[in-house]
Length: 370
Ligand code: M6R
Image (cartoon, rainbow, N blue to C red; front, side):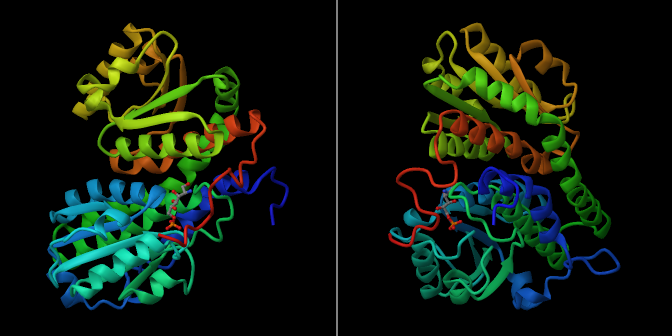
């Protein structure tokens, strides 16, 4: 039930912190090491994994894209992310050492299910990251890592996304642990930052909601939005764009900020709203300066800048028309907070337009046909 909330989506966004927290719960032993025995793939097989292919659709695929940046960095093995419906109809190169990771909230998405069968037929092991106990995708997989976001009712996926990133991170860190790809201390450090994320998400909800509602009021008549990010901010931009189009029926496009001058900047005109995901770690992360220069370029062409950025970022303060602040967080953790204002923004926009945020037109919660 909705409890006191206006919609399931509202309730579920407010459950983002708990979704991350519950997904971490019970997966660390008392020494602080990861324990994923529940996954039932033996260490020997995990050690042998030399490539990961993530298959998923929609929001789940964006969680996979976020995980790609982290897992390649931590484990030093290639991670490909592919839309399940594309993977299914090509001739992918799979070996017994390839781990296919199927990410699905519902566990019933037909495209993802068919893709996982396609992978297993060719001898690869499939691990499901799923939010629904006993659904078809986990049932047909070799192993499952459940996200514990709790049931997600609204068609637009919210808390499942942050839980999927969390679970995929645990998988990556576990692989790093069994393969010896990282020092134990480093793994512990990352896990510590992960444990701090629920409180940081809560900070965003507590302090940014009013600014976001205000921005939605200002932007409600906008015809289109561009969403840009780089590195892990890129899938966050795609997810922000998807949320807004699916429930507010606003035309949106999300793309990698580095692509701007390769085409999309032609779309920027006076007053065009452009949402930038600004990387954290200003001064240490080269991409921060790159994104800021992207902001300058579109600003010079009259764009209306909405930025998601780290608290007090002076460059952002200089250029942005509206800012949704995030507390300090390491780059790889930032998607867990950055997506939250975009979820709230999409919901506010849809509410202002009088749409049913939980049941957008033409969409089903789980897509059980190909
Ligand atoms: O249940 P799944 O995670 O497999 O669903 C995948 C997509 O259909 C889903 O994420 C869809 O894109 C949502 N409507 C996004 O909000």
